[in-house]
Image (tube, rainbow, N blue to C red):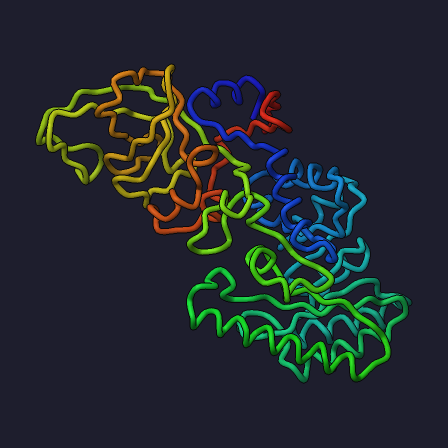
Length: 396
């Protein structure tokens, strides 16, 4: 997007990205895990926030990070091209010989979770005569049943890979329900996963004189399960100001919003009692109503599933006031209730989520999670990056 197009688009919808808030959220992980090394997860374009800008901000903090984690080879390549002098972890590992050679040639650290990957790795190492392996990650399936070795195969793979010169093999797993600590069944499931992980760690320790490192905690466990922190932790959604724990608002756990999605009022209409608003006539005015039209819609990434009553934050000249959706989300517009907001004017700013309006709250009204809101913001929305909200920088 050209600079002129960016500025024009920013008149109708834009996303403010506060990189200082990102760094503050990273510090929350550091405070809670003082003895762990931190691996920020920046997959999916840094959860929709812009991978390059987020990566550069994260490596410029006072607390050194150990690596950056991504989920696709293309993401890893893009990071390598930035010359950031930071390790890169490919969370799903490689799926074929080409991706494996990319990892070996570019020193990208793969997560290995299957016999297929092991056999391919052994074959490529023998074929090309690699004399050292570097750091690799063995994923143990502790109960999520998505990716990972069973106990026997994981221990076997771990011990064999440790025989390669200069190899550092890290044991890792992923928790399925740490976001539900108050749910009895979920808490039991989490403890079962932790016990299984600890059992594998104990067996590995007993079978070798070599020490090794482990990683289990992502955002929710970083905040609520200190027994899972081990040597490496992997913060994800918490970096971007989303709450990883059900029932707890982000601000309650010291997290700040990084993305504030904004738009403007482009029309204000008086609508008679009994008239309906928008596609499908899903909202009918019980009384004569004042309805605002805002220049954002699902074409910009605002969720079409957001129902009547979903909160928005309107900034008039005199105040900030919460109001709500009135009518179905369109591709380019939403309609909001302005009854009682007599000072609203065309051109006023509207916050869809972010500062003053938690994304988690909006997500609940839309039947989704903040992760999806962030990732779904489309390319026609310009991102304005700032370190402290005093100075914005446009980006394509």
